[in-house]
Image 1 (cartoon, rainbow, N blue to C red):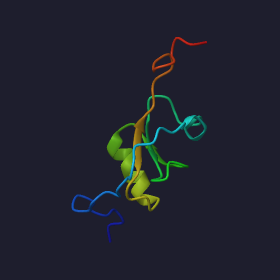
Image 2 (image 1 turned 90 degrees about the horizontal axis):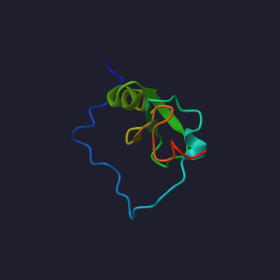
Image 3 (image 1 turned 135 degrees about the horizontal axis):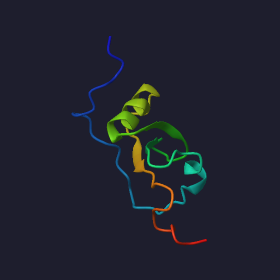
Amino acid sequence: MNPVRDMSKEKPAKREATVIRDLSTVLKEAPAGAWVALSADETRIVGTGSTMQAAALQAQLNHEYHPVLVKMPLPGEGLAAGVR
C-alpha cells in the first residue's frame, strides 16, 4: 500500500485573507538552501528537502496534506543579507 495520497484532485484549504506572518522563529533551525514544508497553520516544520517535491513528500508522510512550501536562502542571500 502506497502511503502517499494523490493530491492532484484535492482542493487546497481556503484562506480567508492574506496575513503577513513572522516565521523567523519557526524557520530558525531550517537548513540554508533547502525547501521547507510548514504545517498549514505555519507553526511547525513538517518536512525538508533539496527539492520542493521532496519537502512535500515528507509533509505527506507526516500527515500534512496542504503544507506551506518555502525556499530557504543560502547564507549571505535574501532580503536582509546586507544587514548586520
